[in-house]
Length: 105
Image (cartoon, rainbow, N blue to C red):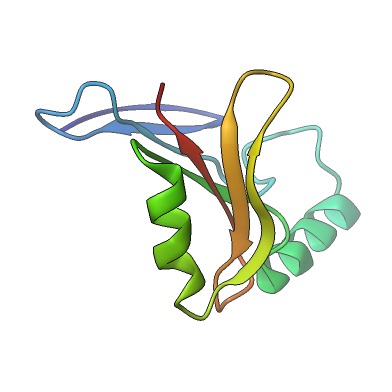
């Protein structure tokens, strides 16, 4: 695995999966333009699961969505063809985190 780090975040690339990466951004701490009040709001949003989202990809969105529906996730958006060319769905996990799943094309 290799990684790169900057003042705005880190990027991790798993071995043998060059098309996959994980980008980790610090919660306001990496941006010197963020005020203490903004940092407080970001921290509160993170605690509620509304600050960031997780983006995943699958080859078969409809089958993945059917599997997700059987769990404890709150469905936010059923599979939809977006005007920008992506087919995706959205849900909140039991902790309230937004998760978007898109279909690989």
